[in-house]
Image 1 (cartoon, one colour):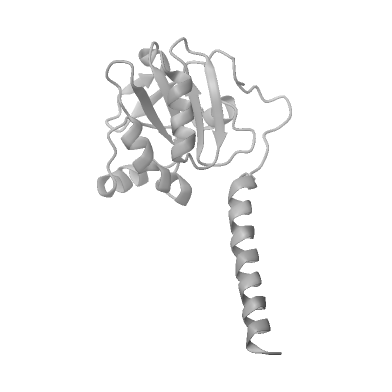
Image 2: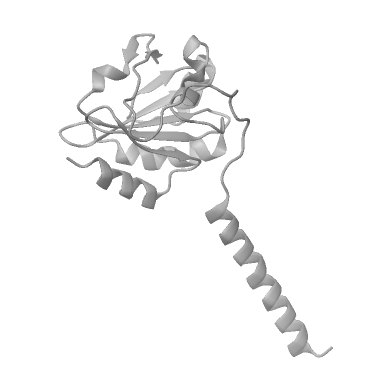
Length: 183
């Protein structure tokens, strides 16, 4: 085998490898454990159900208090690398004033772990704690049929679910959601 043939084989292998990684990133959906049959879940078009969770200061917050705002509800955990990866993007999108997008993080994690994590990685959007409460299945109620993180839900100003996403939010997803939620 001459050096041109060897170079061609290496080049084709590299192109095939990069194509596999690229296609895998596009079509891969996170897999988790599906909820039991009959579990009630919201779908696009449904009215978002209210909930009550503690914030980082221990104060109870409800989804209803933000009614009238476009809300990106993001379920995450400190041990979830894609959750951590998308946090700066979500933080940059959080614009609660006027007609901006309100980002609300719901940590499915231990409160102490969340406090410790956010001390090193602060965000400007509110974080609510669902890890130690009866609301721990909240992501499932909001449509997380795969029980994976991160999981995000876009809620319109009228309180209806506009979109749901399994996995990492990317800039193009966020742009589409901002356009979808614009007044």
